Length: 278
Length: 310
Image (cartoon, rainbow over all chains, first blue to last red; front, side):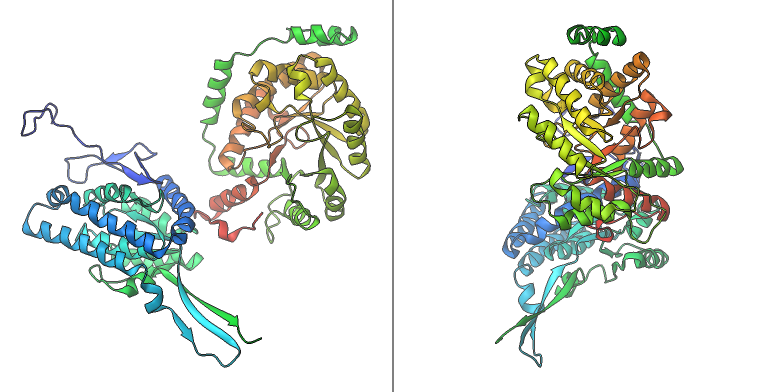
């Protein structure tokens, strides 16, 4: 409402929600917006925004994967700190009830939990393999690359964080499609990630109509995995068909699950045969 | 307007240069920016991308170039996408003189020409006799086209005659080979200088005028290209001799390439939309063009993983 006052009598400053692409907050290149509940304009991202986001992610992934595991852990931990610092804002976005407080707690805890996993994963998941030959044979997990995350509508914040944190923990770059009907927690989470020392492009958040973005994400040859937590069964079928062209990983796990295997779902296992005793 | 024929018949370079009108800088920037916004889609885009490949001078100009690198580049130039004969060959492979023999051997039997830089590329700061000898040797080694640089030091200090005489001498040394004259617009400073250098090079006998070496920033820009194309248009009106244009350096995306084609069409017309009169100097553009073509054909955004590394 124009001219509306806040509690202190100051004219209210209305917020313009933006997409988060390549470390910048931008409007959709299409200039479009939509109102998911009639109250606030949210950018209606186009397939070109998606293309730009994937390009940014591809550019960022090698640098992010090359960071030390400890550094990735520090940055995820800082994301938890930043999220906790904005608790009031997220609680309001999530409806202000007891459930909202609980959900923010869950999101912060998920970030801390996965922050701890960054430098432990290779020991737990990796292996040295007994082979019948003069080789030291070992297996290490490596990030798969660019991961698309279709965020679940509920829980809008904790569900998203539980998908994004393991993908980032593994060393991937992510492109998030915010839920169409509840995009604000995802768009606000972008502000958390932007102040957590994540290198530009490692995390990208798009809002918009799912039907305008999802087919392009699913068929994009430069996307290596797609998490379909927020998709209907019918959408998953279409995604799997489109994903076949470049053999994308289609990750289908329960939205609330927390497990190191969620991290490896976004990783490739590399086995090395190293000659010894020659 | 200057009168070309009179100026040359009097061999009066000074009056030729004085007659070159100045360039409206703001206007050139505006026009280039507005033409760059034009949207080319679907079948028109495919046509433009096909033309961009046919007009491409696929380039490698590194101190680390080896015969193997040149061989790979030649293979890519002849058949940009292995297994897909619908993608045309590029116009030429652009290399250093020492690599001409390698390129010649690998391009035998194909339509791809060998273009060699010469005349103390990229600075042009050497003795005239050496520059002429280099161009001559390049042609003898098999270069179909020679890309020479002008002596910017002489041009900027006002010694137009030296620049002119050198171009004339190198043109003569080239014999049957086409001569492209690199102005290195990034070092010329103003659009007025670019226009003057363009007219000077064309009057001296250039078959093509080319923006940049690719070794200096800024390299090719759209407004500078517009200024050079307008100089070509005016030169053709005066003399009737068509001169080609080659932007080079910094052209990496299909979008940029298409913007150059739009400016070309709007300034020089359809007659220039052929490899005989237009070239795009580029080293990394080709993969992006191939990816855009594939995107138009399949409807899916593409990944560098599925295209050859250059």
